[in-house]
Length: 268
Image (tube, rainbow, N blue to C red; front, side):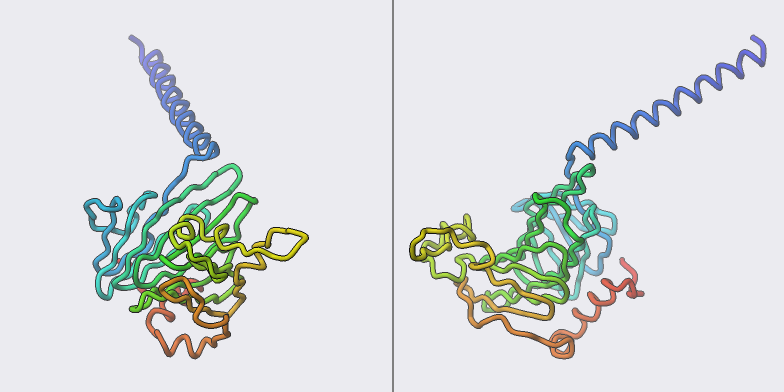
């Protein structure tokens, strides 16, 4: 067999491999555009951080670990973690905290993201990219409050007395209780649907109360505290950066630096 013939076979083999790789890439891209729900990745890990199926065995989380929907993430004392979603949104988990990632989906074609997470205990800080599309949603909840956003920076604390504190740093967040602030007594129904079950009756003509009328909309540098029973303890109030930094200096400083891209701390 001549060297020229061998060379031609090698060229055809390389061309075939290249075409195959290209087809695989196109199929993967097509799957993403069709609505495959990529999960967030851990982009920062410090200290003891574990994750796994809710109620299942938890494994150590490293930088780059994929956190699938249906997972719980726990941090040890002094530990922290950052999860980054495909649209660039970020959720950070504070020390001695636990969150459940109940839903996470991203449509590469429409750029629509749907995220729902529950802060079981401790602290969470979210920097949410501007949501695209009417079906997009990004919700972070606790056992007694729900925060829905459309592009903002905010955080949620679950306090020792099980109260929920929501603080907004930029943008706006719609906060409703579970049961919400309008006095429903059917707490189980409210937990299942904390928005609809708390819509109040109004005088004729009978017109359904809109979202803006029954949810508190927190703007930039506003906060609210919701008690353990889903009862608003006080009206939304303003807070200052100085007050916030004084209350939890390390947590606020680290998140602020990460948001601004100025953090020099390296992940484990």
